[in-house]
Length: 346
Image (tube, rainbow, N blue to C red):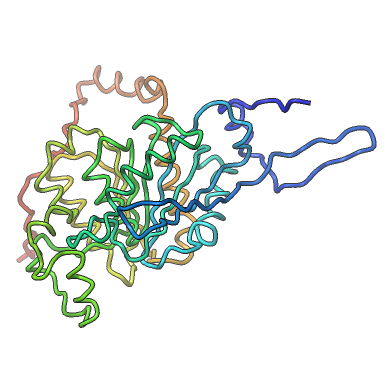
């Protein structure tokens, strides 16, 4: 018998109640419960990065029965090798988010990059930005049932992956409808000369040379440093309509809250709309991820499947404010550009 096909809407409606895979059988009937997610590994021949490039792909439950293309979600792993990251660390959270509806059905793709910084290296030996935004994106769109447009493509990552998310999304905002940068691990400085690289030691200095040049090419470094990217390209980012989530925990031992706060202030002063969340009491890892990951997934899902039309209750409230004369349209940046000085009371 030819299996019936589920539409995307039908699958989305059933996801909140999906149970683990099992079969219910009686002497008279047998009913198949929707399958669990499926993980596959892709070995992609390339000249852009060490070949073959390893890419892990997570397919949502019922993927084989979908007739409509679904969104593509590129997830960038943190500062580990990246091996098994999607399966061991992310898959349980993604499966849970699919079941709860926090994340709509999508194909999750994670390139295994090692400590790549998700950039095109100065020495040309690794071109991870180019690989992800050209060859990998083209291959996935050609060989998997994903949407082909910007409106169906998002990117996200945590720690080093949060840094990579910013580097790629801020450089290529035309490719993604939304980006979620969690606890991004870039130095909280505006200029390379303000970055203390001595803590990396001699081994770290060698790594720096491959990525940024020897001596460091400061123009090259600035072009892919997230705060400088905002300072140097505000109009491009404002006009792109990229939906950006920036977040960190205020107890992060890696200090990424400093990086996130710096970028948030620069985005605000540049009138670039974004979501920003500093999670009180949250660390770099641990139990806070139980609520932070669903929040990031829900943000991306809203961007991929935005509500249609105005919110009736919000519109009713707005009209009441207009009638009472208290409504003033909001501009993106309404605070003074210079910091406020708080004097101690005399």
